[in-house]
Length: 308
Ligand SMILES: C[C@H](O)CC(=O)SCCNC(=O)CCNC(=O)[C@H](O)C(C)(C)COP(=O)(O)OP(=O)(O)OC[C@H]1O[C@@H](n2cnc3c(N)ncnc32)[C@H](O)[C@@H]1OP(=O)(O)O
Ligand SMILES: NC(=O)c1ccc[n+]([C@@H]2O[C@H](COP(=O)([O-])OP(=O)(O)OC[C@H]3O[C@@H](n4cnc5c(N)ncnc54)[C@H](O)[C@@H]3O)[C@@H](O)[C@H]2O)c1
Image (tube, rainbow, N blue to C red):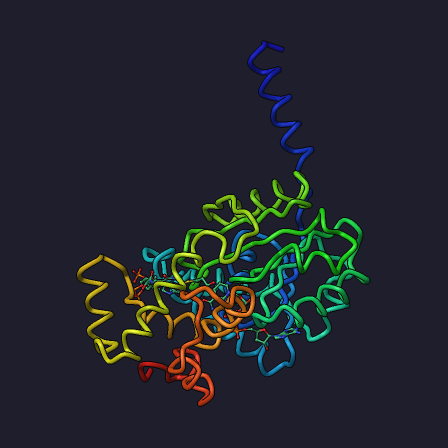
């Protein structure tokens, strides 16, 4: 063996040793994010189980995935559309659904949690899953804003716990923030990083700080736009046009808040306000609260700042 081959094969062996094999993935929560994560995982060849609270929601999740795959095949098989349906049924056959999270995680390699942005509810879920999952199973949260270490504390596997923060819409957005706590071990971090690359995403390394990289910048920006509307400084449409045409963003901040979900924006802001009550950027917004109270959560409910 030449020196170069020897070094290369030793390097690969070391990297492989630092990663766990992932065959089966469980996604808990089949909403905007969970359905996207299940979809891209199945597209990368993983077997996936998607869990949600009832079958009606799960049927909706599958319909969202199917609709997204229709858009994918339009491009992927532009030259031969007849191959599209076979591709969609192959991907859908890799995704199973259940309402029983304990059963779903009993023989899985990676759990990705994408449920409501509430620390108490996430902790309760992880503490239950910890009792039934294999010792080797890695746990990850897709939280937008909450502490990964805090969630990991309720389990006996803090070294096998990290953050996987995907972006909406998952099939289109290239970035995943991979969050490492002070307890996450190398094997877990490398496995999560490699999983993102296998999905065709670009992972970045993040510390467990509020909002990681993107949301620490993006959420105050979206909220300042909401406060401009609140103050009567400008209309939602003019703000969005301004940021699209004047700053080159694909969506304006108000459209984006509607797209993310006004409930999700409120959960993030309220959580940070509770933790940092004196921080001026995290003060609750009466206008945002009003929309959420009225059930106008943005695109997903058909109305938010805009009607869809
Ligand atoms: C808060 C959280 O914690 C963190 C977050 O997620 S913050 C939110 C981050 N996301 C963003 O900032 C999104 C910003 N918006 C965008 O990038 C773009 O508007 C967008 C990609 C969503 C849509 O693109 P846009 O050009 O406006 O609309 P549209 O023409 O419908 O779509 C563009 C392409 O994407 C495809 N596409 C859009 N959504 C899709 C989906 N869900 N699945 C598959 N394909 C999709 C379309 O088929 C279309 O393909 P084509 O160009 O080949 O026709
Ligand atoms: N919406 C975004 O743009 C975005 C982007 C990145 C990260 N996130 C984060 O991802 C997570 C999910 O957000 P979303 O926008 O997909 O929310 P969503 O409201 O669209 O979906 C959440 C799903 O979780 C289900 N759920 C709630 N509690 C559950 C439980 N105990 N067991 C199983 N299922 C349960 C709900 O029925 C719902 O279908 C949140 O932590 C959010 O902060 C959201």
